[in-house]
Image 1 (spheres, helix red, strand yellow):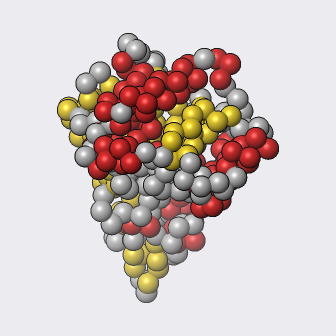
Image 2 (cartoon, one colour):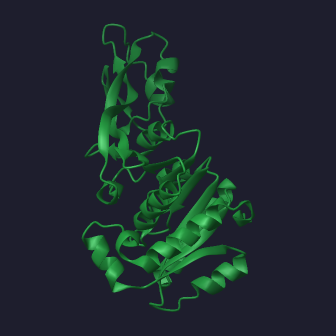
Image 3 (cartoon, one colour):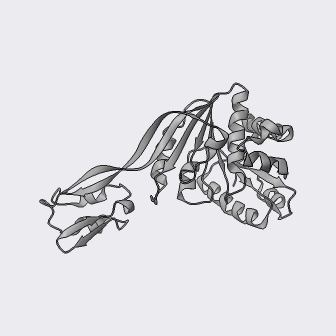
Length: 286
């Protein structure tokens, strides 16, 4: 089962829930993998300090122009939809950071003057943390496109057991790529106006992908923004409601999983795991 833990906005406690859930499932003897898809700012390793067995580069193909063959006809520039090529005078300039590696330019070149060379855009760290298999993607500094790293990391999702995918926040392309193909999505939100607004956007995104989803309300009790009412109206199941507790924030600040030091938090995560493994818990969003 692929379980994506996502959120419409950052700072809702998504990674805390994702890592806690992975540890809880592993404590029950389940085969569990935790994968951090927040490749621009991965931080699950703080809660699950891993033993990294290998670091694998993520590469995308970019065009290399053979100046002796190139006639600067401009066909490649016309074919590129991402402005990664520019025809200037009698030369074709390549902007690697703009290239999506689609290969259209090479197909369009009538002189066969374009080949492809690999360019590293990020890395994957593969290993384990206790009984939990661990993997994280890391986008190289200055790179603009996270999706190639996310796609490479998705190939590392195990076929068997439970896989907890820690999604990037928001509703942009990296989130869509992470959620696509999942068995279930946990949307972590908070009872604030901002939390409700971004939850609505996240629900719309998940609905468009046709993935069953449920809600985790974190820091419940800090306000009444209508999150619970919205969930009832939309037929969204609230899998867990985690009370606002200063001790949780203190554990977080120390880099500790709250469930290991706060019994009540551990019980809530345990019930969340129960809900996820029960077949009748699967409720779609329509």
